[in-house]
Length: 141
Image (tube, rainbow, N blue to C red; front, side, top):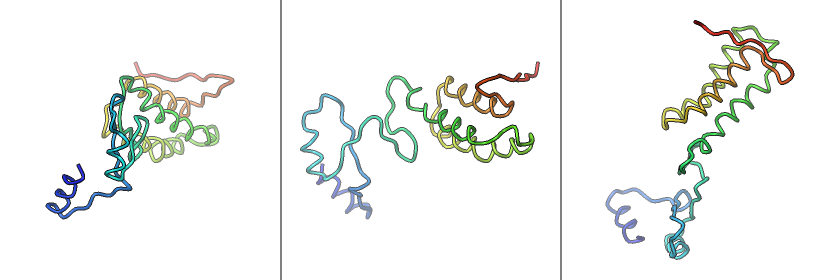
């Protein structure tokens, strides 16, 4: 493998960065440590991320994207929605909260339950829901 990487580097003029490289192995691989030592790179677990996106996804995709809902909820919890006008809420939601999810949604098709969780968090901020009492969410019909 090292010879293949060296040949690639010589042919393309590019260099493989050992610090940024990693390998993912299936659970039944026996030569994992030997390959990593020979190539001087680390192994990657299924929970690792790259540029904030999941590097690998298992059967349950909801677990991979649960952090999006958590980030949206965390962003909206810190703001005092009742002190802002509707225009102020709209600016905050568009400039901060929706930006959190855009990059991931451009790369992956996220599960519907994650989309619903994000929509619920945005609605709760917009309409002013709090833990102790719920407000009515208007819906067009």
